Amino acid sequence: MTELAMFTEAVKNLLPNTPIFIEGTNYEDISILDDTPLPEEKDVLAEYAKVKQHYQDIEYQRQRTREYPSIGDQLDALFKAGVFPEEMSAQIQSVKDKYPKP
Image (tube, rainbow, N blue to C red; front, side):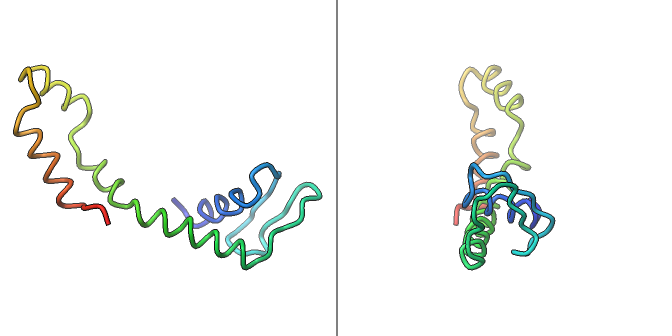
């Protein structure tokens, strides 16, 4: 996720039903397209920090997703074995161990 996407998400969290236009990641880059008042800069920056932290906190999920066997491979292994095979369980567990939850 880009810095601009995170900044945009933060502003949208504060102004969920307000039409906005954002050109960059600075407070001055926010344009509100109706008469809704702009939140204070400190509130926008605090929300931006929360969004950014959340994105970083779930990095392990993105890493795991890239390395897990595909759902198709998992289902095929399950079908062929008649049960969830140890080798698939071990492969999934190794990814979980490599990228633990924080």
